[in-house]
Image (cartoon, rainbow over all chains, first blue to last red; front, side, top):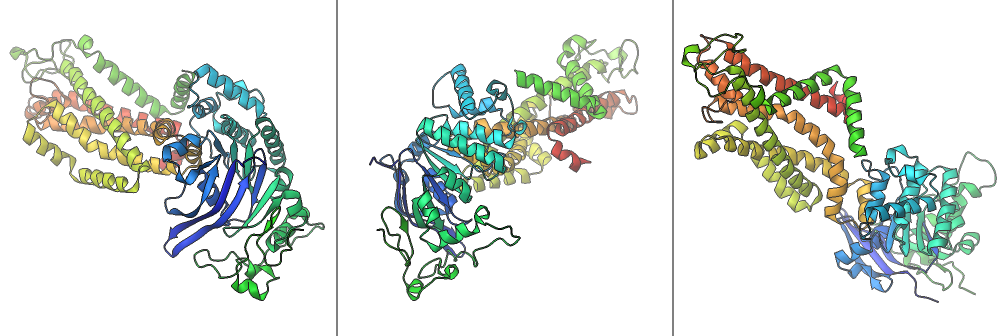
Length: 322
Length: 286
């Protein structure tokens, strides 16, 4: 097995707040293997955004890394000098944002922005333009030459997201972080973008870290899935297995809430009762206990650790690997 | 170039729909034209004294009459326009450039730097402009360069504060974060992404500031604190005329009208530009 592109170990990040330290991520470990698409799923506030900002090292001013390492191709990103980190961004590690309506500069035309991304390439204006055209074509934009002179507001949402993807892949990164890239788009576009991403991933051979709360998209696209809850990984494993036979009660409940998996028509969609634990004042035992419904006596006192080899889950109920 | 052409076409189409803006544009162009070509358009040397022909009313020889030394008022007003234009051009562009740099630094830089800069802006702003000008001129003696310097110093905080607020608003926008995620340096973000986003509103602000600066120069020259005597300025012409108001109203009328024209012209034009390039503000103004 080759070295993973990205290996996160024990990542613990907290925010300083007025009430005390908000522990946004606790001992998060996972790796992104070469050429694979890894999905991260979890409800709002589970630490997805903090995780991404940790990898990009674009923290909020009150964030603090307490522990852990993020190793990208043998280098610990958290220990890298700021200039070296900046050299990786947009180069070896790239990112696509959630809302294509706001992630492009409104006053610059597409051509200018796409040329701007290539500022490190050292190539001339004509070369940059040729490369931009090629990338636009590869993400499936019709008549790329005429799009270069247009401004973001003249393009549709799907087009803009394609432009954003083209910009992110311009430098052929080894890791693409996609932060809910389809959430702001409608369903038909979502499918198109997902298929395009899959195709591009095969062509470029990059790894993708795909963050979403849409389970269907994760199931369609990702090789492996990581389910996060309240700042911890609660389950991880190959997507098909994790979704067909979830081991953590949270994954099970999450799947039960997916509208696509509910067989009969209903006006009452299921919900997971309760709310996230207070991240400033964490419970001593299992963080999911309050909402679990299957909790036992030891859940209140002993925090379950992530265990398993092929598939992992952090639950006292879990059956060990065969 | 195509973008520039587009902008020009857009401006003209907008002006066509806005008669007041068009009037402002015509006034501004006319003023710029006559002041730039004053040397060719002026019928007389503005310094030429003719004691036989003092304080005369308009005639075929002197369209706007003559002043107390018999100098041709039209020629003096035209050359006075050059002073006004020079002061506003130099003062606004220099203070705008410095204001941009400091404002973006405050808006994008670390919080402590922002605090220091904001306190300095507020300190500078807290001096009443005229009092500040009087103090500086009392120390250095009256000259046009002092006037320009004073206007620059007092305008910097005004521009810097607007730039700072705009930069702060942009700073949180997704596309700036996206640029960071793409590895752009702070300088690059400021130059290529923040600047183009705030340049248009700032230019409009600058155009609307021209009357204020022209008025400031005229005011100081009126008080004898601006240009030194033989040089014509609208302010000094007003002052000369004021002393001889009982003999002839023409110097006051001749220097007062261009001041009014500058104010109206640049204000109408600036407002029209703002409506064309920032339609969001339109509702608020009306």
